[in-house]
Image (cartoon, rainbow, N blue to C red; front, side, top):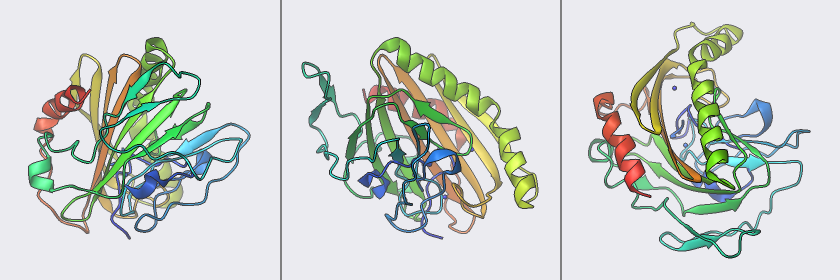
Length: 280
């Protein structure tokens, strides 16, 4: 579907923000088309300027999978940190309070929390966006959001996870971003094998849709990572995406072979999608 605890190869975002304090993945951070994974605990890779605004989510291999963003303009290093449980108002939309759905306690109701034992890795981060493209992993991106919130986690085995919330100007924009992500993930197996071929790694990537709901999809990717946004290790990356109104809720986490833990039961993924939707 990320050696420091890594977050999902399903996540890598590069936006010079403290969000990489947290992972597809879950869920490493980098920017531009060459998004790379988080290389050390809370260490976010430098943000690069590209002609087309772009960002990357935290990749596997880092302590926390926190995405970052990059754009033609340097991100504000003093981006506001929104305390968990408070409301955030985005510039340009002064009359609308944005509910912070990503909270440190946000994973408590997820079916997988009991076996993986996630704990918050750093504070909740909130960042306004202006057209940046956020790279989640080697396959998927989110584009067009105006507000991006993230919370990172580490499991008891020190595998990384990350939950993200993206707000859009309207329902149609959010739905379009979700549809693009689904299309990206539909070709993720071939994309991943292409990267493996280029890096001389066995072409064994297998991407599976593990659950769907009315407006949500869950994926898993089992493969030998190629470095960069993913750890160079046998791993399974999990990515969950739920579209609701004007926002998307994403959750990512990794399972690295070098950090053994009880395997995640993808049979619970429909319940995970439901729990994520219920948070909003």
